[in-house]
Image (cartoon, rainbow, N blue to C red; front, side):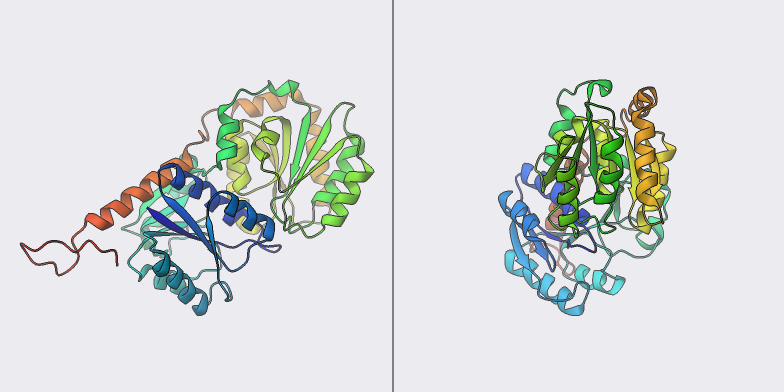
Length: 366
């Protein structure tokens, strides 16, 4: 099975779409398939990471979501012999998606909205806690729905960290700060500046930033200023280990939410986009995290205050971690990959329209 992933990353949209696809791509490889990416925007560090994982990269020289983008994506799929296409991004409208479905290939779509509109995909993935209650059937009556935390796609490094032995929460002396691959709101430097001088002795800040971060200079400057307590990690392949070593995380909501849940690390979740708010509220309602909106004035101080309050209350953090048991088991990406494989196999086995009785079925994917 060869799967083409269409997703973008960059300073304004972050890296979450590509990282979510990476998790599924790794699972596809583990099932013996091939994974390749088509991207109109992709930071060099992220491109290097995909290539290091044995994944081809095909550049789309067009505006994301445009007719030219659609034509280029279809061309890549045909030229590479892809049997399926996985799509992740908010810039692909219904017409674009319908045009992709016209290829006849199996299409899988990651979705975070669940509005009930037609998504034009044979498989739809939404790992939010309430995804099962969303009206996907309204516009997608024939789609296979992969909904809820059981389908949270985790990268291999996170799955391995979740499965490994971890020190008890109260023995972990790291506080992890990460706002995704690009930190579009520029929260890293001001949050670290407020946290570092107020932490108890012996507690370190592990600050993880991606290659698309806009204010890298400011982050590096504040890390140097508090070098005795701050460790800066750029484009780290050890994110799972950093989460497992943390007694608390301050993290952007989004794909990292499921990763922290699987590892059992309580968190201060910070929404950096409006579409993250509802899922983050559901996570907070489950009791394992505290929620702070990042798009409001004074957010860095509120984020730091929430983190300091939780760090000073180990009993509450233990209770939060206890509520994480069983929410995300770490096998979501493998479940999605298996469902995709089954869909592709079914497409190959299904007789084409017009195949006459007694004739051999046309099994060429359309």
